[in-house]
Image (cartoon, rainbow, N blue to C red; front, side, top):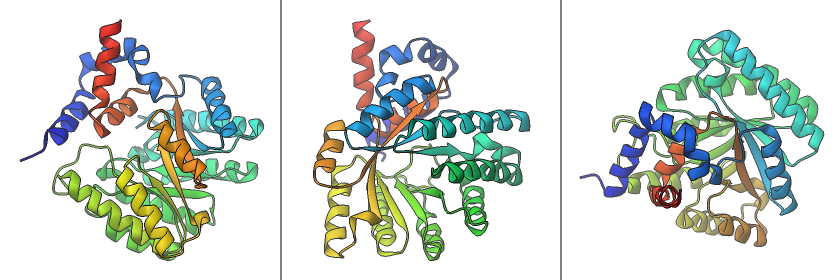
Amino acid sequence: MPSLNAMARRAILAAAHNRATKAFMGRYGMRLGASRFVAGETLDQCVGVIRVLNQQGFKCNATLLGEAVASAADADRAVAEYQGLIKRLATEHVNCNVAIKLTLLGLDLGEELAESNMVRLLELSAELGLTMRIDMEDSAHVESTLKIYRNLLARGCDNVGVVLQSCLRRSAADLESLLPLAPNLRLVKGAYLEGREVAFPDKAEVDDNYVRLLEQALSGAGYTAIATHDDRMIHHAITFADQHQIPRDRFEFQMLYGIRPQLQRELLRKGFTVLVATCYGTHWYPFFMRRLAERPANVLFLARNLVRR
């Protein structure tokens, strides 16, 4: 029987597709709590947040929110927006890389289109000294995303990373196939609503798989971004790295803007590299709902703000 937490997570993710909920949140969401997790609706606002985080000692990444374009022209516009983001970050001389979803670059229209658009962005990023990471989306996009990532490495693009989700049953095999490439990987638990045929249905299984992936990645070549707010996972990563004498320049911790800032500062004080993931844009609703689903207790934070209005 699913836990209350799992049922709440599914309910929140289902609500993300409800038109009435989306309309209400589009009107009031930033005031009700989305601004806790979103660095702003404009690039100027996001850059201001990144500057402050850098001054505190954090690395950052920046994401322009948006998913699944409907045409090649829309994908081209997304490329232009990301080119603007990359140039702005370089001009500002901030310690920040860039994360992007391939569906924003036209993946649903064809792998070739998405890959060619990604190459355009990586070439500009390399020229300006920035790196990029391909965010992982739902299970239907995993195969294409990893195929494009491998193609990019084969092209000589060494300023690109990718993400694996511990909720997916296939991720251990995917990691095994990537390790010979010395990949730049981010490990996450996953925040999409998936069927039990492709994903572990229970949190305990997702957590156990995260530990296995973490140990496997740290034991191999490449660089590992440990993206979690889970104390147990963080403690295990530190203990495992110490026991196996894994240098601290082989991994970093990544956390989302607005989530557990005290823990972020504590890890920074202990000498670990900590990246705070920031995002901006007007299409923040799906991102915000996934953040609520990751920790349903955050719904109480939203409810309190609703009562205060």
